[in-house]
Image 1: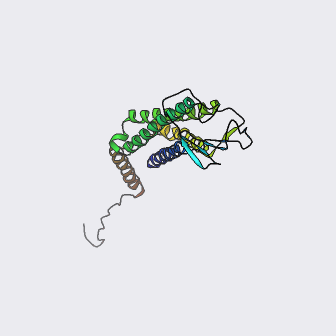
Image 2 (image 1 turned 120 degrees about the vertical axis):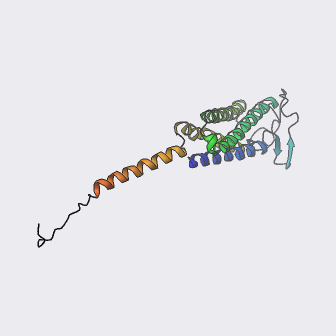
Length: 219
């Protein structure tokens, strides 16, 4: 059981770090070097900023989470599409942190016996995985052009989503494992010791006492 909880903690923490890294970096998409110069400039695009590799400058996106329908940083990309993906990732981050906190709570024996906490953990795990997949697929569906290709930030986001999908397996396993209590341990120990005693009674024969009489002693 401790191994399963450690796996959950490691997965949630890894997914959180990877997701924050993908949000804060600006390499979700890179423009193709052969794209028309009048439409785009060779650089990388993130959820928050855009970096121009020729000018060696990065410009932060204006109006974050305002869902404005305008081109950014150039057509056909729109500001609103980046905001939708960013909002979904933020909610997924909140669910990931909640799952991490619930896993820490389940490390305590008193909380580990509560089944509704395990159901809540599974629900949060499924929700975070669905939100992560939706955010990445939504932005990919909006960025459909030959002049863009995926950058390393999007691959980091996908890796985080894969971990969130995998974490549902140990969360589901917790529901099928019965917690071991001190009462069960004492009962098992008593049964084992009782069986051992019984076996010993059968293995060791009872010694029979004999009374020796002197043959010279008259009756």
